Amino acid sequence: MERLRLAVSSSHRTALPLPAPHNHLRRRHLQLQQHLPNSLSLSLPISPQLSPAPRRHLPPLLASASAAQDASPSPKPLPAAGGGAKPIPLLVSLAVGLAVQYLAPRPPEVTPQAWQLLSIFLSTIAGLVLGPLPVGAWAFLGLTAAVATRTLPFTAAFGAFTNEVIWLIVISFFFARGFVKTGLGDRVATYFVKLLGRSTLGLSYGLAISEACIAPAMPSTTARAGGVFLPIVKSLSLSAGSKPNDSSARKLGSYLVQSQLQASGNSSALFLTAAAQNLLCLKLAEEIGVKIANPWISWFKVASLPAIISLLATPYLLYKIFPPEIKDTPDAPAIAAQKLKNMGPVTRNEWVMVATMILAVSLWIFGDAIGVSSVVAAMIGLSILLLLGVLNWEDCLNEKSAWDTLAWFAILVGMAGQLTNLGIVSWMSNCVAKVLQSFSLSWPAAFGVLQASYFFIHYLFASQTAHVGALYSAFLAMHLAAGVPAVLSALALTYNSNLFGALTHYSSGQSAIYFGAGYVDLPDVFKLGFTTAAINAVIWGVVGTFWWKFLGLY
Image 1 (cartoon, rainbow, N blue to C red):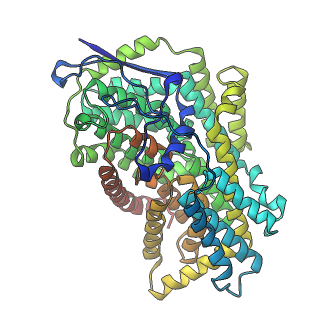
Image 2 (cartoon, rainbow, N blue to C red; image 1 turned 30 degrees about the vertical axis):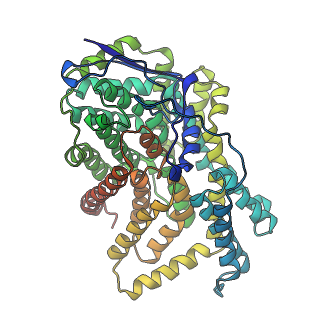
Image 3 (cartoon, helix red, strand yellow; image 1 turned 30 degrees about the horizontal axis):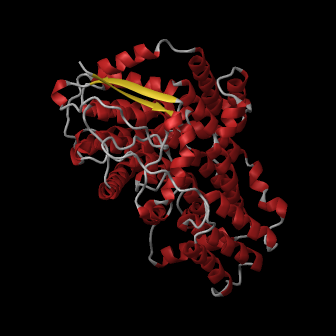
C-alpha cells in the first residue's frame, strides 16, 4: 500500500492569496499562525479504490493551518504591511460618529457625556466592521478619542485592562498553545479517527466528538481548528485524492471541512470554558445585574441537551445536504493506529498537560465552593506549565493574538461598561421595549425577534468577540426590558454567540481558517452557513423550549 506523507514545517508556512473582496482575512491568517505546532504530519496509505494521486511533494500549509493548493503554482508572498488607514473605510467610520454627535438629536434623558461616548463607540464599531486599520489599532484610536475629548478620564478608559475575564481569555490562548506544542490535541483527535473512522460519516463523528472532548480545556475554537483539526482533515482528504481548489475537493475534503466547522459551534456552546466569548458574555451579564450561580455547572446543564443533539445531528445532516463522493474509508483506523504508533507513548509534557487541564477544569467547576475564581485557576495552571517547562515565557510572548486580544477587547469592554454606567444601554433597551410593546408582542415572541436579530447582525462582523463586546450588553438589556427571564436571556444570547461563528467565511477565526483550506467555494460557504444556522435554530429552539422549561428557566 502506497503511503503519502503530509508534513508541515513552521519554517515553510505561507499564506494563499485571497480574493480581493476578502483581503481583510489576510491579517487573521497571519495572526493565527502561531497556533500551529512546529511539525504536523500524518502518514496515510492510499486505498487502491480511491483513485490515488501520484506521489509528489506537497506544498506547505497556510499560515492559518490550511494547506496550499496541491496542483497550483506557489502562492505569491503577501505585500508588506503599511500605507496607514484605508481612506474610504476611515471616512465612513468617522462619519458615523460625527453624524450621531452633531446631526442626531440627543434625547433629553441622555447626558452630553453619554451621547458623546456613544458617538465614539459607534465610530469604533463601524471601524471594526469596515476595517480602516487592524482591530487593535482602530480600538486604540477610539480609546484615545475618548480620553483626548475628556469624555472619559484615563482611569475609567483603561479600567477594563484589569478585568479578570479578559485575563482569563488571554491565559486561554496559552493553554491552547500548550495543547498544540505538546501534540496532545493531535493525539486525542487521531485516537477518535482510529475508533470511528471506517466510513466518511464515522470520520466526521470522530473528529467532532474529539473536539467536544478537548474543548473545555482548550478555550479557543480558532486554536483547535488551526492547530489540531484542519491539518488532520487536510491529510485525510489528500490521501483520498481530494485536493483543494480542484474538482476533486468534493470527494472528501469539502464535507469534512464544513462538518467540522459547523459542529465546532456546538462544541463551543456546550462548555463555559470552550470559547473566549463565553466568559466575556457572563461578565457583561453580571455588570447588568444578571448573575449566574455556579456558572460552569449551570452553563453545561442548560446547554447540554440542545448542544449534544445538535452536535450529533450536524455531521449526518451535512452528509445528506452536502454529501461527499467517497462514502467509505476502511483504511482510516489502521492509518490512525500507525500514526499513534509513530507518535510513540504519551510524553512527559503531554501527561503534565493532561494533569494541569484536569486541575484547571476541576477548579473551574468547583472553584466557587472553595473560593477560587476562574482566573486564579487559570493562573495556577499556567504557572505549572511554566514551572515544568511545558511552556516557556518565549511561547507566551510569541502568542501575539493573546496580547492583541487583551488590547482591543479591554477597550471594547471598557467602553461598553461605561455606556451602561452612563445610562445609554438602559435608554436604548427602553426604546426597543416600547417598540415591541406597540406590536403587543408577548415575551416569547420578543425573545424570538431579539435572538434572531442578534444572530443575523453577525453578517456585519468579522469576529465573534467583537460582536459580543459591541452588542451583547445592549441586547441583554432589551430582553430584560421586554420581560424575558434574565438567566434565559443571558445564556441564550451567549449560545448564539457561538453558533453564528460559522455563518460566513469571515465570521470567526475558525471560519477563516477552514475557508482558507480551499475545499469549499464561497457560494457553498454562504448557503451551508445559512442552512446550518436554520437547522441549529430549529434544534435549539424546539429542544431548548422543553429542556429549559424542565430546568425552570421560565
